[in-house]
Length: 184
Image 1 (cartoon, rainbow, N blue to C red):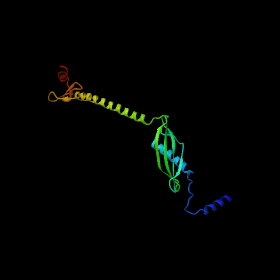
Image 2 (cartoon, rainbow, N blue to C red):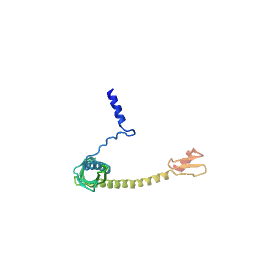
Image 3 (cartoon, helix red, strand yellow):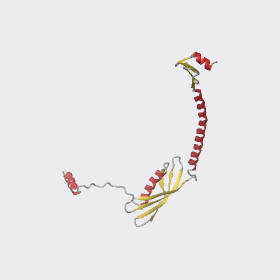
Image 4 (cartoon, rainbow, N blue to C red):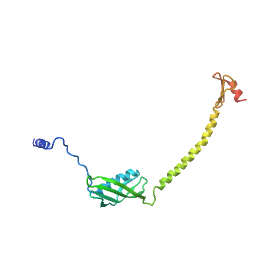
């Protein structure tokens, strides 16, 4: 009974129309907030990025209510390679939000870049072009086949079909016209 009585008094103490605000996890520092924002930004810009890690963070004042965070990070891609990048981020002390996210100087640790992917795309385009060009020659063969589908009439009421090598008189197969047109 005491517990119910205490809960009733606590409920009356809270002003009507106000609900307790949910606890929002706010990062404790500009470096933490920017680190989280940069991880999401890297994954948005580079869909192949896995395991994004921020390795360093340098915080400097960017005004009375802002801090500028810059540093370095790295991520793994789907192919098992690793890449390094530099980043920059502005943190607002007033509302705890980040802005002006900047990711630059992305380099693969092995010294490579996305050049292999670009080269693969170029080679793929060349191969596709060759396939399309080759299919144009096949279309010429289809045109020849189309000519073989020609239908003509050697006499009134007679229709002959080249592809079938058959003739029809008044809509019915005619062996005599077929022999006359195709086999003599």
